[in-house]
Length: 245
Image 1 (cartoon, rainbow, N blue to C red):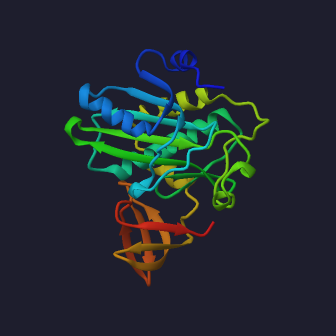
Image 2: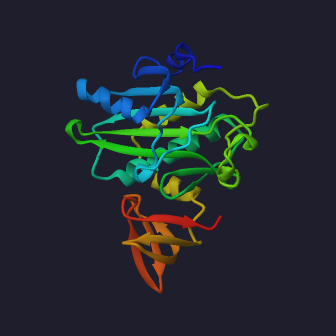
């Protein structure tokens, strides 16, 4: 069943401009193209199907059917602090899921949301400096069966709801959007949902693999680790972290 634009509009009201399409390459690209021609305002782009989804560092993002593919335009935010935007977006997703389902998602630093040890959501924040604006792309494996996933993802990815569970994509999308526009600093809530704190993580920096213990997240969303009794701060733009689930 396709995204119901009328239902989504009813849930969000008049404050947010909404664009819904059947298929797109990337909702983030749609948002950035829109901003080239229009002023930055609260705007949401949603697609039923996404064929060129992007992850961090330009990696492709697997976009299965019956997913949630959305990008929100966030005007007048600190685009030079992407970690804070990403952490707030992760909490926005978790709070929406918690309020509308009986699920308890967890966060893997910095931009992934997991459920029962499987990744169900990825987040990609991109800056549009000319408009002092960020676009926040969120992709959620909403409904499906793990058996339908590619073999290389069956052990890593999952879905928010099973095929026989009752849930509305429109409700989840609207609740996430409302949370995104609350403009709150949710670092404490972010940390309370993280599953890497206190655990061993490996990270790659300048081509060298390191192993350390994740000990905290600072106010700017950077991961603080302890390696050989030395404290280091990792920025999401410079490292890739793998944690033991």
